[in-house]
Image (cartoon, rainbow, N blue to C red; front, side, top):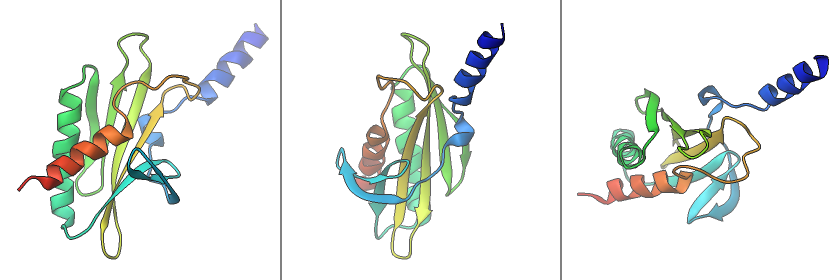
Amino acid sequence: MRLLALLLMGLLAGCASVADLKPGTLSGGTKDGFEQTSEGLALTVRGRSLEDVWAATQRGANVVTRTRAHVRIVDQKPNQFIKIEGQNAVDSTVFYTGLFLVPLSDAIQVQATKLYLVRWVLVSYGPSEADYLRAIQRELSQP
């Protein structure tokens, strides 16, 4: 019984939640056409106001969540972040995505971070960070 309790505590210690989402720092690499951060991917937007980038981020997040079953926005703070929760219909794997607006001196960085409830997931599920950033890029390109 004690071994079972220790195993359960070990599994729970590896669990993430929507509260664990956070922006990262640039790591210097690229992935899927976007800058890599310590937590996910980033899109740097120049020549647009924070309000414009926020509106495009909201629209992009809504486009992606509406096209996927079991994905929904669970929290947002205007001009700062949107947090999204999803569930894979096949095996009920829960995942979280955060979209963070990080003002820089001459630009605004939109960072996308994704976590799974259980950190040892071997196969990616649901929309990727790049899916959200591409949707935001499309929204920013609209007149």
